[in-house]
Amino acid sequence: MLLCRGVARVQGQQLPSVVLDSNEQLDTVLAAINAAGYDAGLGVDTGNTTRAEVRALLAKEHIAVLPELGKLYAEHHDPNDAAADLGQFVSLGLFLKPPPNFGFTVPEPDLPPDARVLRGMVPLLKTFYQQAEFLELWGRLRPRYEAEIERYSPAVRRAIELSDAYLRSPAGEYLGRTYTIYLSLLGAPGQEAARIYQENYYLVVTPSKQLKIDEIRHQYLHFLLDPLALKYAPEIQQKQSLSSIAREAPALSLDFKDDFSLLLTECLIKAVELRMDKTPKAEAQKKVTELTASGLILVPYFYDALADYEQQESALSVFYKTMVLAIDLKAETRTLESVSFTQPTGARGEGKALPVLTEEQRLISDADNLFYQGKYKDARAAYDAVLAKYPGNERALFGIGVVAANTRKPDTALEYFAKTLDVARDLRIATWSHIYLGRLDDLLGKRQDALAQYRAALVTAAAYPTALAAAQEGLAKPFGAAKN
Image 1 (cartoon, rainbow, N blue to C red):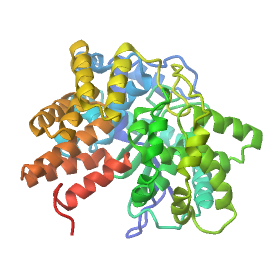
Image 2: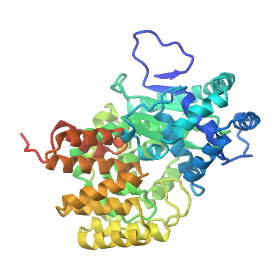
Image 3: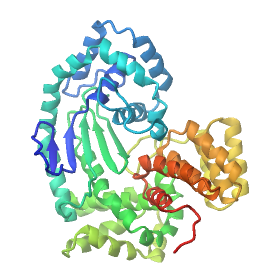
Image 4: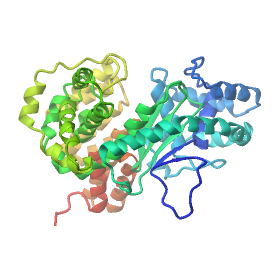
């Protein structure tokens, strides 16, 4: 069910699982950085002039805190990645309570890394909110947000209904989880920032002439299918050997290389999208080939398996286990031997392609490959070499921590996971650092410290099924405890 802001909420009625809304604290953050130097995408015609008008209004105000905001934005600005530049401020906004206090919704140490490094913005934001008289401005903006919500609502509702129909999702299976789509009129045009925090899903969408329905549907499919990867983790683990093939794909995201269940889910979603769109056979096969070459190696399998799913009556949540168990490792390995993986092109598209590798990225990738091969001594030397040339590289720090954990050097592991959390921006790395620290605390008999680490991991673990299972298991019993 879809709830749009302005629709009455019946007292005592269970809230729908999908919400289309605006977010005042998020847009206060974006208004502040717009006034302080966030100029990405200016001049692009989106059919919506709200951002330009707000910037003009703020420029006329006497906002004494702007120099401090400008300094903070300049320190954190990423000129090479517009999505990451916006995304960090989105993360901060999602963890703020409503104005004027803007308190955090979780303890500061539990904030995701990209929000935690911006926590110093909160005092400035409080001052900005007052000096810019943003409460009044937000009231004037409300009709524009209502209009944008109305523009999106029919298409979003249809995308959700069609997805539910294809997956044959039973009503009420969400178990209190929510998927919230925030429409922001103050971000750079054509952006979407997806986040999963504490098992709740978010997608922030900025202005564009074309509705971002495909992106909204994609995140909704994750919302529906990600829990199945956790539920059927043992079955997925049986197919884990295929991950060694995916790791050879240079254009594939590291998240997919490091978490096979995440890769499997992404492949299934891509196949579902092709089936739902009724893509003509020739076009679909071309798309399947492209996706496979990008590293999404199970798209062909799931595209064919979904044809069998469509011929029976069970929901996909029931058919899922059958599909996973039916993956023939030998047959898939033989098929994938003929695949020529595509090289990174610099564009972020299907398969989450990475930009052309820099020297730093190439060196860390080589070190990771040594670790995957079990060559821990060589991997440690390679990570050290990365740090010698690029101090503070979070993947190298994390890599040394994992090597130490695997070679039974707990003191070194503790040191490097703590160092990783001091600099980490990558959510997967931060999540696993908390989990490893929790496990080490358990082995040292520090159960309360371990529980704190597992709880911190849970803030961001839902995006990574293997990590989520590990964090939940750590909360349930101490790591290393004898099984019943």
